[in-house]
Image (tube, rainbow, N blue to C red; front, side):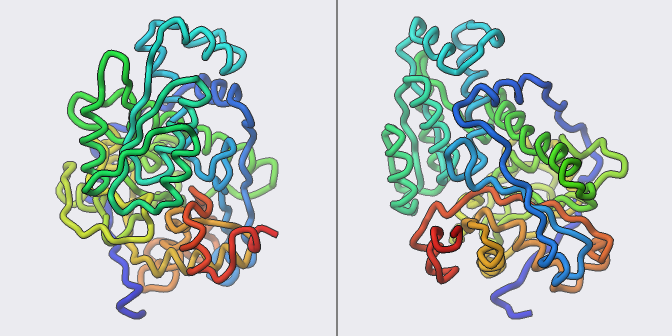
Length: 386
């Protein structure tokens, strides 16, 4: 294995400590069904790739087109925004048949606006939710955000503020915008700010509820391994919440960039810390320096392993997906990248990656930077999807 494609695997030293988050109820899925364009995203059986890697099966939940946006983030952003508005206004949380009905009554409580920080997809999802509800939005982004991602957020009607700093700095700027009529919708948490990011985690539960249904309807085996991406850890926490009580319980592995392995660092010391890094990774959706305080207890409790990978692994995964007709951006391919690293390296046996392994992966985004996608894959997203 070349030095350009290294990885760092850690067994979670905190495994089983503390307590995980309580699973959300049916209200989350019921709310998502109110959103325009809601439908199950595909669960794709990659039999040939599994065979090539010596595995029993690979099922991929494809979140590259969720509610007409190119990532899964709308699930968390929409539910968190809804819950934050209900709490702020005192409006009823139930009794709505459509989002439009809720938006119409919301007018009586205005003017209100939303604010968020993002490395891409979360900010666009918050901006979309604001547009659907008739609210203004400001989104803070790091200095190195690709212009295509900025343009996508602005296309939702949001004001984008580019700061001279990284994602964590954008978080600080957006947090300072909170006021009586501006609600901050963040997918990460800090001291005194935990409810909204907790609702974001709850919102992601819809992904796994759909997977359970699809595994049965497609006659696929339940996963023995679930590989989940780590940014600040919100989706990872949702993964743990869903699978922690299963019997048998799958092995849960979190993947993050080598340049931004903040969850791995936090688990090593048993508390959330901010890592020092140049944060140079093409997996920009995972390019975070501090894990979420609200997500960390669940991650500590239920992640079995973490793996930090170099960009080469994710880029290899993008090309493999493209050969299967699946479009995935750099962050979206991280879970397949982690699987490639582990099945190619010396650790596959101790993690149980053999011909009995049934692996669940998630493509969390489409080609949010089309120029970089074509550079890596050699074809445009539209050519791959034909």
